[in-house]
Length: 382
Image (cartoon, rainbow, N blue to C red):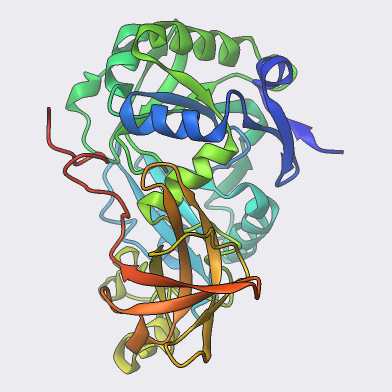
């Protein structure tokens, strides 16, 4: 039976529900397009409590994460987080994660919902040789997780929170302890939409005792009411992340995909020394991959969907769509696909086979898909 998050009582009354990664989650409330545009132009709030939250602590915690993740954990300071990858010996991506350093010997990992059990077993398996110097606990059911995203996210959270550090002073991937509507929370400046925003970790909120999470959620909605805040479901979360050029584990990256192929090697620190998958990744960096993830913008009418074939100008199949959607902002189809490196260069054109009915021209573009002077967290102040 599918699980329910700490905010189920709100969703059950207002949202179209879907099952995702073993959870009953809101797909949309008002509609995907309006929720999407609220985040791009003002602010939206998401329940992301289905994501896994793993606490790794003890004298061996840093060493365990240094060997099991690709980024530089040793250089990560308390109060900061980093995007990272866990890879197998062949360089395939076991999961993409966020690592938050709470203290010298205490870390919080945010993992993909569908991978929670796999990641927990992976970490515990590699911790066996550390002689009890590290403990790993699954906090997913004890900590609610809320994302407030959009150019007005800071205004909304400032109105309902008190924190050890001013929220405005937080840089991207920094966090602080505080309170939201009087509820204890960790407040982190990060997100999965391309916009400025924050992710909140509400301590002591369980599906059985959800009051703390509901209080924070309702306060955020009330504080953002005049700014046009909307509760947002998984539908808008997916269209937003795709416009930003972010990968989704499963369709876009998996254990048959390497960080080099996925263009995620910015999160791989080869120079830090040994970690699982290092040699395979290093070899591919030197030799070059046989395929690369590319972002495609359709130049003609049509919506590319997962599994659609990508063809070269001669009509030969050269790849397939891993994620595709109609972009509410661009008002056209956008997608990701893995292509031969010579075809994955921005400015080149390919064809997308729309279920055999017709072929639509598509241009390879650099992510994100939108104009970064007008949208996204680095937009120019108006």
